[in-house]
Image (cartoon, each protein chain N blue to C red):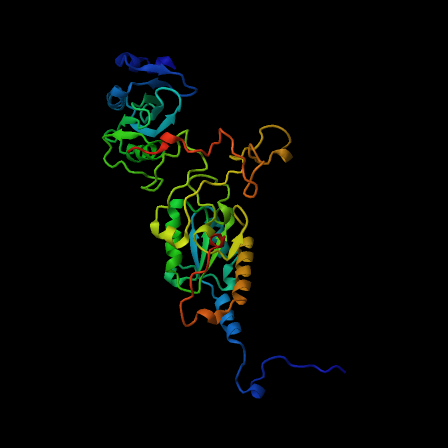
Length: 179
Length: 218
């Protein structure tokens, strides 16, 4: 006969109390209610919209609340070509978002300039904002976006969430500035 | 072709027929352009300005030409009028905003990208590039990759240290071969010996050199 151990929460034994780490709880909350800011600049935004529809259903991951106000969102999805003229707008919207905040570079253009090797296109949005997840594709399929967002969830889960609770977190270093 | 524009050529002896692969086209001297276009609109019924653009011939005199593509909504005919601009580095052309309202943004675009000053335009500002941008990118002596300049926003430059830089062309612009198996027709640059990691060896005819006379003198 095999002994079975009940790993579930037993309220009678544990007295209605759950013990956990603050990081685990806070990150659990954060990663399952990412409110994206759809920074739709080109055709990637069409795939972003498809990801919000019933077929792909981004709400399975708690991300369906697309907010067009930076004050109400915490993950900027840069979907499309960032021109130099638009760069200052992208940066300002990023600055207006409340911490903690993340940035997803969706597609080739936002990640590296893509096929736009020209005088007008910013060669990767990571030159002006710190990017957490890059999604390849031109444009990426909605599945790729969902996978990228799941990678972001993994990343949020590994963060030290308490570091910035009592004070504003400094704006993270941009990769190109570290050279 | 000539038969269609014969009455126009007779009414305006300054016009000459211009070789064209599709629609009838005429060359018009710069001084007469407003008069000729007014005539075409009022008396020949070319009431719709499809497009207004410019051509840079670089080493040919005159260097810049402005092209008007007109359409008649009554006769369903097209005509193209081409006029040379006076001036080499800062070309000047008469504005036709008084004839067609749509010319406003078209002329702003031609000013932005070719640097053509439209005399009589009500609001000649850049339309695509930012206001402080010093060059005119569609001129033939402007490299496709761009030239390093300041960002339009000083605030952004202070925060990030980023500047508008020449794009890494890595042998581009990229072309797909027009012949051979489709398997070998991946778009490729003309010179793939250099990329982000291997510096390009500078050659005298490097296209990223900044021509001395490219600075805008407006």
